[in-house]
Image 1 (cartoon, rainbow, N blue to C red):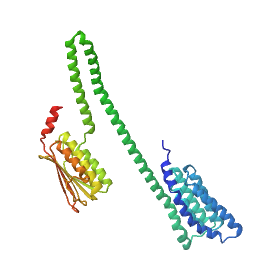
Image 2: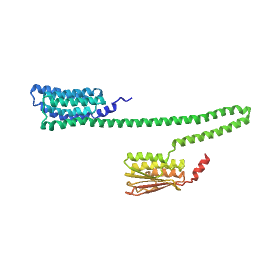
Image 3: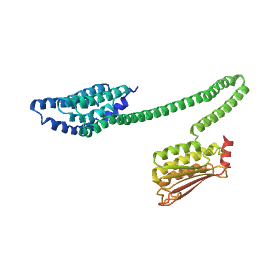
Amino acid sequence: MTKPGSVLDRKIRGSLLFSFVWLIYLIIPINALLHKSASEMWIGFSVLALFVLIYLLSYLDSSWRLLCVMSLFVIIGFFCLHYDQSFIFMGFYTAAIVGMLPTNKQFIGGMAAQLVLFVLVLFGNGLELDESDMINFIPSMLVMIVLPIIMRGVFRSKELRSKLNMANDEIARLVKNEERQRISRDLHDTLGHTLSLIALKSELAEKMIGINPERAIQETKDIQTTARAALQQVRELVSDINTVTISEELAHAEQILSAAGIDLHVQGKAEAAEVPPLIQNILGMCMRELVTNVVKHSKAKQCFIECTAAMDPFTLTIRDDGVGTAYSASVKSQACAGLRGISERLELVEGKLQFHSAPGEGTRVVLVVPKVVKNVKIRENQT
């Protein structure tokens, strides 16, 4: 199980290398220490080295971060009160760390400690706030107060986004598990019972062959009938698993196109309730293939999908404003393999594919399926 703050910690540790870059600004306090006496200079450099060590350690573990930032406040206070108030600008380092504190309680404590430090620096040595001091210190202190709030918002936003992605992945996993369990239940409740019945009747027919041949023949016929029923159940289960609808594929297309930065415009009735399930399934699969082509090859900014189910025949039009192509749907090339697959699907329901495209003029594909499909009726009667 993920520990609280661990997602945030990974983000922070990832920016640890970047934190080294900001150490270049320590050239300012280093330059100030070089103008001090030898004893004060070596004390100052020793404390500054401790500051750098604690600063880097604060990026590594959230459990120590509050203690680290409090220690940094003490060091800054020491520099400001013992050397010069200008060392308060080292507070920009602590401001970033305060924004990364893992809990709200620690964040409030860090902000409070920062305000106490500012008050001590401004009034600890009896500093009078004249106009020059206000110009030098007040704006910087305000930035150091606002910076942790901004950083906390940014880090929390990343953490929430990461948790949302994890939650979506978990939901997808649970949905898949639920679907597997549903299929397992359906197989157990339907085929399990039917196959058990076939096994029992087979054993009974075997026993009746020598005792009652007519009964054995009847049991054999029952086995044949039950086997056909089992075959039909398998077909229904497979059909239920693989079936897609136009509305479902439209929702899926919207997600894919949105991720690719393509605007989707839908016209007509998306539900198309009067469209038979078999035709919806075929049109849905064809739509999926065409939308994938739009994303991969069209370089379009907009995609238009129009579904017309009120009149005969059913039509589904997909067009884009992309770069277009010089190929035609009849070209026997690898580039048109997807279109040939769509044409083969449509032939199952006596449908046709109309392809229109030209370089720079986008692509328009129309899928046409008659409402009365003889092949479908024949196949349904055969099953």
